[in-house]
Image (cartoon, rainbow, N blue to C red; front, top):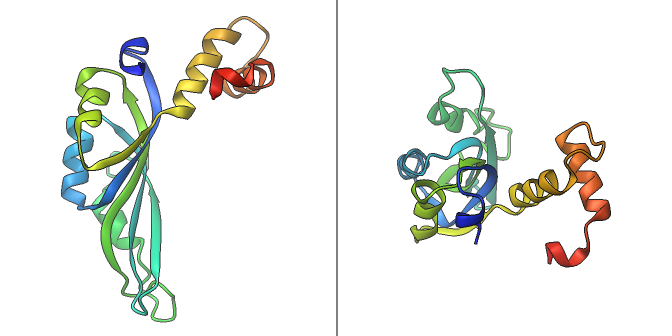
Length: 156
């Protein structure tokens, strides 16, 4: 299991919630589970009843405020399709976590989460270990070399 095999490693993850959660609930969960968010996807409805989503990318700016960015993500232009959209909450968060009982362990116990997808992080971790010293000069190079030389059964 990843919780034991990758203890202490930093992995990319995508968290998908069972249903939209509030900004406050999301912030609390991310802080408690020590998840470093890179993007947030909120969902809701337009004034005509169409479903919509909006992804907010976190900034390296220390003044980045997800609450402010959430409000700014909805158009203020009366001609835009998402003008005055009603947001239900957040459905997904992409980011990094350091594998531990306090982070991944806590997320695994949280019934608000539908999927904790560490596939990309785990594959890159495996590829980094298996391709070290074989001529790749970057993580992407390592990943591509690994993807081309790893039997399909490893990723099934």
